[in-house]
Amino acid sequence: MDKNVIGIKDLVFSNFEDNYIETLLTILESLSAEQIFRTADADGFEVIMQGYDDFLAELTLDHHNLNIDKFVEQITVSQKRNINRHRQQFENFVLLIELCKSIFEIVIDRISKYKNDLSETLKVAISLYGLILRKANQIFLLLMSGQEDAAMAVWRSLYETTVVYLVLVTEDDEVLTKKFVEHSDIGRYKKAISYQENHKSFNFPPLEDDVILKYTRRRDALKNKYGLDFVKSDYGWANDLFGHKTTFIMLESRLALEKFRPYYKFCSEYVHTNFASFFSFKEGNMINLYKFDEFNITRVSIVDPMQYTASLLDEVTDFILWRFSMPKELDANRFLIVRTFNRLVESLGEEE
Image 1 (cartoon, rainbow, N blue to C red):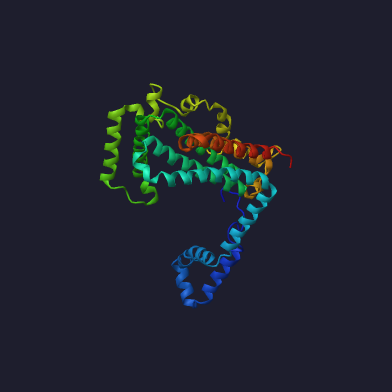
Image 2: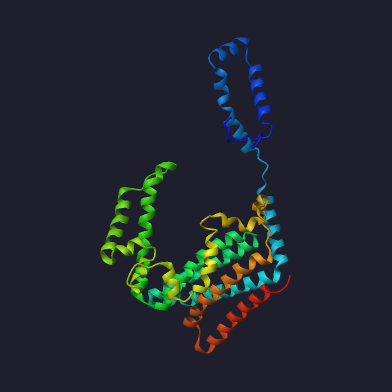
């Protein structure tokens, strides 16, 4: 055995060795003496037993003891336990999300007959607002399930979407919005090329040549139209705002949202793995390996994801209220959002 292999017996299959021997003896008992000698002379036992691993795997899969209903029930029990332990905080968090979702649903229902009259910037902004609400709801579901590390990873995406949304609605520039939409073709090109270079590793079929050609021509057209930095940068669509290659930090600073950067960097540790990713699983100076399969949540672990998510919802909903509220209703609408946010923050600060 390789010196680097620890070799834990029955790591996957119970009584593997005993079952193997029993199977071999069963085969031998079914053979005549002549067959046994003939098989032994031709190294036939190795051939006979080659199918054993496949047989064992199929047998195990066909007779597994997993009950999916009980598995889901266990998750539900865990979710209810987390909710009951922090009921007021979860209730206030969901109240804010649902309030924003209600506003979104009314907006898309009422403007449907005016969609041809809406600017492209407003159309994109409404879509991004819906995406932001979806991510906020995902954060709630993950926190309810005791997976604050996953919630923080989603928050990072939520924040990036929020920054793009706020840049577009703040600048209110149709040319900028058009570039944002067109820039998605660069992403399609990169994904197509990456797939084409690696599809054989997974035995996937290649993309048709005309598909690659279409994306390549589109990339080249955008490069000729807007310049090399447009296609090289993830935020090339915003280059005109600064006169040179744009970064996410530049967009963030333009909006004066630097206050969110420390938490953004903290959440990044759960996306781009480093040793700090184990922070939630440490006890003293040791990593508690059993915690990786625990889905309980503490007051401390929900405070930041809830509060920072709520802060972003407050930021993005303000534009929606300003753009779609009746003037005499605007202040009251804004106050309700602010009061809902404040109630959540107050509950997060309460003693357990």
